[in-house]
Image (cartoon, rainbow, N blue to C red; front, side, top):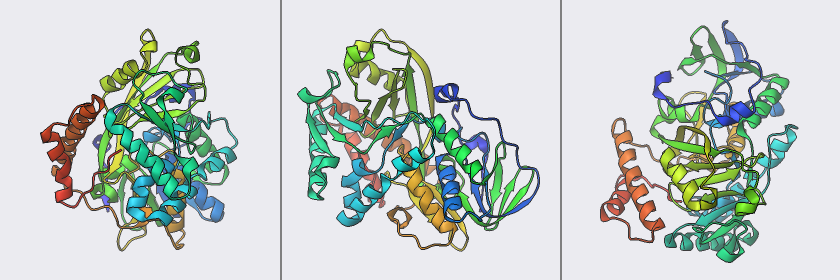
Length: 443
């Protein structure tokens, strides 16, 4: 089925999140062969939510979860901690799935808040909603469209336009915003730790420091032992885009984060008293949030630290004297339409999910429910499980093409933010994927 070389997925894993919330004691690696009902590969949000859902629906199901490092050492412990569903993606959902299914998916995705609260631990859950801000003239119409689509489906309260003068956050760059009440922020390392504890309490067998070397249709082979399983779930996300079954469905990009030192007078400088998550309307967006000790986190979907820090200084010049205290980056798995891909390898009982495209903290709960249903052989009705995303070109063409398109989209972003016309080469390159049947989603 597939082999994974740890060298294929690179990037630092140590983050400020893990320093603030150190993981519990390490769990022992798997050293003896074992027979189970379901084997899960990957100890991040997707794998842990899947394990919890399996035990909730079928407590007698024997579940083993295998993690190559420590639970949460991958993207689940590196992200910005934006926890939200799909109301902010409503225009794309309507375009792909139609009005009825789009609204149903957005509504279902909000169940993650109750699920997180049910864990009963302090994960810094701050339900302040999310602002998508316009930072260039080209973004104004995008925000108006988002609000219009929400109104058209009968949910105007889910995407509310805010004029610049009504913004509660002081930035010379923000032109206006759309407010989505469907959003919160969390401390992702705390959330991983809470999920891990809940999975153990539910009877999930977790083995850390257990790299998986190979998967076939009935066995997971690790470096020192083999798991024989009726059902197998691949929940490695960005790693799945390298060697696992989703390799032709998603590509790997990078996201970079900078985090400031604590700013005791932050609210006096820039406002931001509601704790909102914020993202700009660029395709390779900048995303930012506060921590519980008044630090500002600024992330860049470009994967470039310099761009992340530039956005911090540009958007909030009031923080010019504030130092950056931490930096980290890592891989994210990106699908062509920016939505997760869930599937089962033909002729096997191997299920997988990938393609969260930077929005996985909340949707991993929903995808985990879908993966659990597949593993329990229940009927699944999820648009993520449909065969909608075309296969990407093989390597090395896939990585080369992704990098070329990335450069074009960044050039378009920079031009639009500056109020200029996009370069002709960038606009032309942006359309190339469509010639081979790929739809590269924007914003």
